[in-house]
Length: 110
Image (cartoon, rainbow, N blue to C red; front, side, top):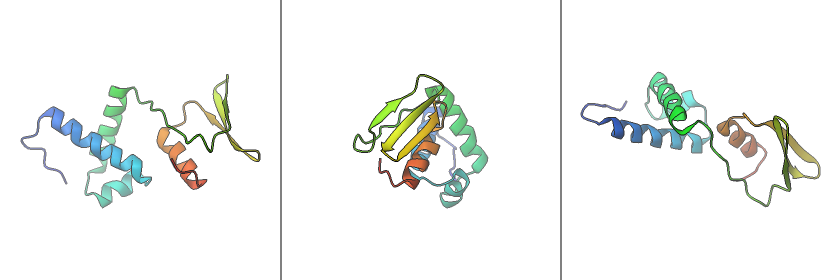
């Protein structure tokens, strides 16, 4: 587990930003990521919430144009059209990490 002695607030923030980025890229569950990387799960969750508040909690996901044939949605959902036979209706509030896992499961590379 990381020892914070002697680190400034900014250094701690940068450390957790890096850890959260690695977790998002890993595609694994938070608790498992913490176990693998010897991180305190409650501290991880705290920083995840704290940094979401700082950056607004909303991130855009860049989708490869080859897999998206249409994107629409004036209501509280958008429809991701991957092929003629595959359409996914997703609420605008859908979490970034969940969408990435869904796309990965479908075999879509980001």
